[in-house]
Image (cartoon, rainbow, N blue to C red; front, side):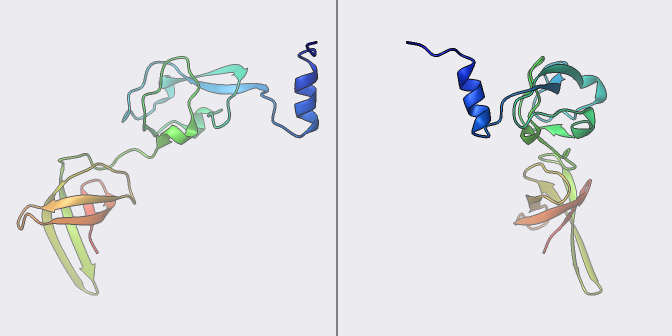
Length: 144
């Protein structure tokens, strides 16, 4: 004999399980490809069942970059967003090495892309050596 469907949710609530509730959830207004920086017009708010980890306010996502493709009409998982990239792959950058009063600069080519504070590999154009550095600002990478 089947139990009524209502008993299962009440049982879960009694155990302290999270039951999805209707709340504001943020949806992609259009399909956003990976690498797209999210603007206010790219998102819409809807009153729907919010999955765990979904953004609920435009303030949480505007200015961030989609790390994966976000499809129109679907909730936006906060975990699939990150800071916008300051350096793109193959971009010419300045490498800077600072120690004490010494400041050495060289030109390099980024072998990856990244945001401020992230570590990327750079090829020194003069020596063709590959070094690892931390992105400081657009076009500037600090090497240890």
